[in-house]
Length: 131
Image 1 (tube, helix red, strand yellow):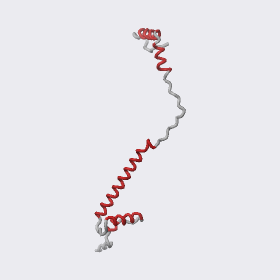
Image 2 (spheres, rainbow, N blue to C red):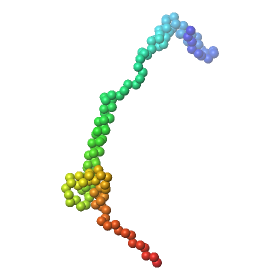
Image 3 (cartoon, rainbow, N blue to C red):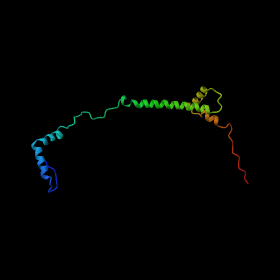
Image 4 (cartoon, rainbow, N blue to C red):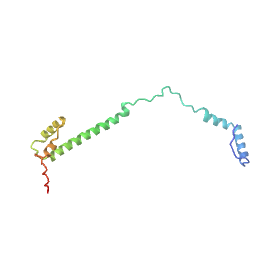
């Protein structure tokens, strides 16, 4: 049977008992039981493994990567040209200087800017007079 727990001597006990009996007689409790407990089964699935990601799922990552790479290359070239303009002693054309700089980078040498900024002779410190 059905019931609702209440304290001893509750004034609502008889009213709830009568309401439950009426619901049982009208077959409402059986209808609710079938609705909530019998029919809610999940369908069986054979394959529980995770599905792999395809290009349609991760294609956007490559678009962002390529865009970032293009922006980085553009900024590097822009900085490179700006540094060549700032460096004193520009006797050569811009293209020649860029090729020389690129050649120095490939051979892991100092850049032209560093070589041009160094003084021609190293100054040696004078010894302090002893008194």
